[in-house]
Length: 133
Image 1: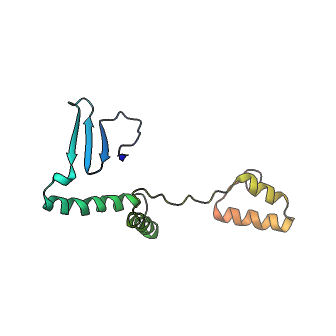
Image 2: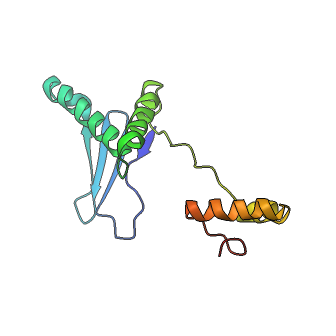
Image 3: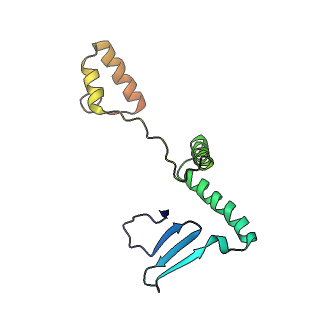
C-alpha cells in the first residue's frame, strides 16, 4: 500500500514522496531520480527516537490553527484514530445551515417571532439578506 505524502499546491513541486511499507521513496525534481530510504534498516536507537518524533509531528499537525479545548480535542481525535489503526482521521463536518431554510421558516413566523429572530441574529452577528440586512 502506498500513501501519497505530498499535497497539491499552486507552486511547483520540488519533491515527490511516497511511503511503501517501511520504505520512503523520494524523488527530488531536477535530481538524479528516485531514491529509497528504508526505516527498518536504521539503527534501533534511531528508530526509537524517530517513532516519538513522528508521533509528535502527527499530533502537533492536528492542532495547527486551533487553540485551547479545540486543539486538545483535535489531538485526542487523531490519537484515538491511530489507536484504532487509522492513519487518516477527519474532524466531523460542521453542521450546515442553508439560508433558504432560514428564510422559509422566517416567512412563516408571526410578527413577534420575526422580531425576536432578528434581534437574536443581530446579537449573534448573523446577517441574512431580506431578514437582517
